[in-house]
Length: 355
Image (cartoon, rainbow, N blue to C red; front, side, top):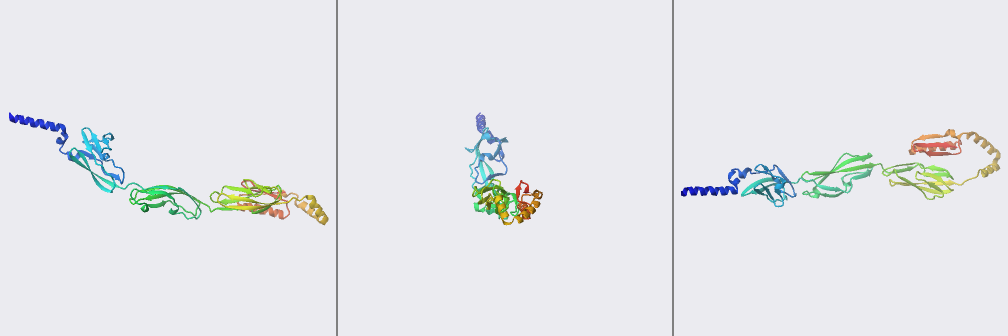
């Protein structure tokens, strides 16, 4: 009888014990495979670490985010409470973390590595230079450069992409920043090579009659060469409009200022001749030599009977084309084939007309 009571007591005690934590007694492999961790865990150096995220399952039951409490470093699921370690990733290398379930410890091995690329900010990402000007890494202005592990002085910079400063054009380049652990980041850079600035005009000094006009032919290159402004130092003598057309107003001399947005400027001197009446000239000629004047008028009359037949169009807008048109007009005048001429551009060339 006493033996039976002892057996019953032992059975009840076992039932009570197993009822409190049946898995601890029923699972012979409890300390080996109760908890499953993720494989090949890598933590970035100095990153904040949530050790609850490393546990994948318990008893083949997948751990959900709702089971994790990273503030308290515990995982709760069914009747289980897993205590997770606190960890600071302030040293690189392999680390062993200890997780607790009841009285059992579970080990999880992780690797702390520097996997963050350097951070950098450029002051500018578009660079403009003139032809043949030197361009290297030293020309690139960096506002901010840092890395979580590598010192600033040890971060390597290199420039990818082909460019030739002797050739005009736009080049797309890439600036790379690489730390000591081969982590890299990059930024795009645009390099624009402009022609060397220049500014040329068709003439630096001209003579006009009152009400006569003259268009300034301009040739320019370089950044901003498409914007040119004109101004006259004395509008009472001669004016100039935004297209470079000069109009003579009164006798005298003035300076036309030509300014290009490429940084260069030049000037043109305009001399406006005084008006002379035909009557005065004729009387003077008659009093000096009537016979000679008659002969000259007769000769001139025959040669100037149709000056418009010498009109000519020069195709092109370069300075050399303008000079060809100008030289042609002066030649016709010097040969006495016309009294005067106009040289007018039309955007595609120059039209020389005689009268």
